[in-house]
Image (spheres, rainbow, N blue to C red):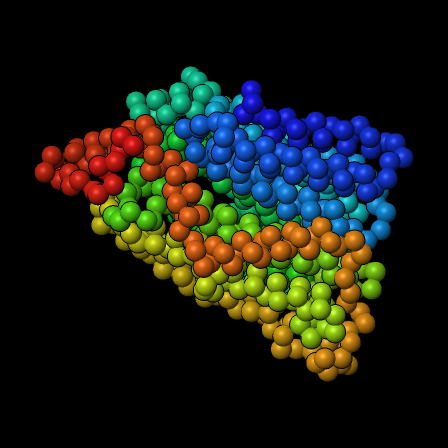
Length: 532
């Protein structure tokens, strides 16, 4: 029961915020309550991992740690507003429930809890999009997201019904055992895979399920855009890892080719369309789409049952590590933008950032440098964290062995890595546009060094400053010393640990044996540690 303490604390605080919302409670009390609850949840979680609990499910530990860390950044960002707002209790309570939902997805051991966690994030997102009226078209954004999210949830649930019908169990361990018996193989096994990918494709904004993202991001506030770029995407990736790599790893042999196609389309379309954007939230929406494509590279590699030839790169581990560096840079960028005001309005376009690096106030100059570092990390420029994230996913596609299908399958993975590298070069163009607007272009009617009257710091921005500092420090530290974080991702990877790895290697070797006979079974270096 003690293992659930962080989630219980956050749920209690969320309920308190929602119960007190109808009463005349000062906004600062809601912020204090949510911050105390979030800090308590984070503290309890890390104390548990250090002293109280020994968990064999390292993916759950990884995902919960990600949920609480991201939650702390989001609560700090949400606590910085310039004026008395309406529905503060509902907004902060819903945010905390969304964080609990991500933690539930991470620790889910059956399909029911997995779906409940996803829906908790969705319901929290609906409320936040509607009650936060700072965005220019918040009603349109909330309505569009609500209807499309409900549709995607229905498709995902339909896919889970097929999974249950084939396996006869809701337990992920039971699904893994059923997969070893081949219940997900063949054409019938492709149906739940396609439905799951369709439902989760909306959550992670993968092409062709991405079309809502630019309009919703543009129509809402910076803090809501930060939430949409973090919680649903992290939850969606964890669900794909849980279901496709653990629960249904014995699925159709060619399912990975579908994910490969999604990855190529998502990367390419996201990056190309971002080149023409001038609205900052819309640009970051397409950036978020493209980064989903990069993460799908890792999923593609993991779904081939490929084993790394060396000891460093693995598809699922690369995906999880990339998720960390993506969230740090994206949340940091949105936190910076949320603190900037243009008169009484938030900054909206690239033109609003012109000459920000030369503002007379030190706070604004520091924010300009911080935003530049986040943009460079998203672009994959060394020595920042984003560079190692891209290197991990690209090398996971290059550094593989034992791929069922032999040469053609391996050549497709190499092609995927090449497409990813080309897309990274394309993406650098629009990230550098943001940097260039702040450092190499002066504001209209001004020269570098003159005071910018229009752009100013939002009142009460200190909590968001702390969020930016946390993201900035971690982005730089991971860039300088990524080894520890790569190791965390590797330990959480379902393809490099536990009984499912032994079963996966046995399945792979059995297929190779059928194709080529016993002589065609080379022992990969990592296949010797299956008992770890």
